[in-house]
Amino acid sequence: MFEDLSLIRNMVLALTAGYFLGALPFAHIVSRIRGIDVFTTGSTLAGTANVFFNVGHRSGALVLVGDITKGAVAVFAAWTLEMPPTLILVAGGAAVVGHWKSVFTRFRGGDGMAPMIGVTLALMPALAVLGGVVGLATLVIMRNSPLRSSWGISVSFLVMLGISQYYQIERDLVTGLVILASMVLLRSMFTRRRRLSTEPHSVYQDIDDEDVLHDENGLNIHPDSDLGRATSGPL
Image (cartoon, rainbow, N blue to C red; front, side, top):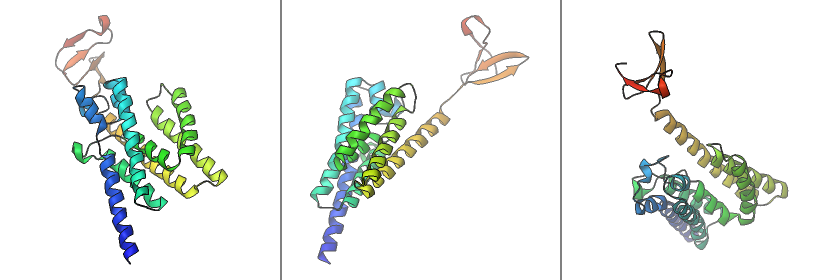
């Protein structure tokens, strides 16, 4: 009985520590130091990619290291509490959730890919390195695609899953990691689609047999005019 109570206590501690570690808003802090609000910039996500491309490369590198570290530390904290491997993975998942919905930034956050990498490196370092090499190669190949990060993560974890199943290396644990990575990717894709669907865009229609492109600010733009000259007028 006392052992069960001890396990429950440690599980609660591991999950709580995992969440608060994941909730540490490195992207928000680094961007604020540079005088930029990451939640109103670029993709509006508090993640490595948004900081790297819209705040600064060095700032993005710092955020990447911080986000990977907090995922790894969440795993090490659960290990310290002598949690079984399955519950250690759950603690890592709590770190990802903390990154998604940080209590320190009014439950806003990033897509969770960097903390997920940290969790994977801490749990399966050798497989993570092998998968990471293939994932980086995929990023280079798909560098012009807006989904390059998703492709890289997907290929990386598929390689890990294949090696694990073939050589029978921690198959259950790696399968759990792949499931967690799939949740991260699905949320990332859903967030990106929702953002794109709410962004303002130009509308094209015919008026009096003349092609006119108009936008939401009340400007009629005639494609055939000199250099796309904009003329004001009612829609």
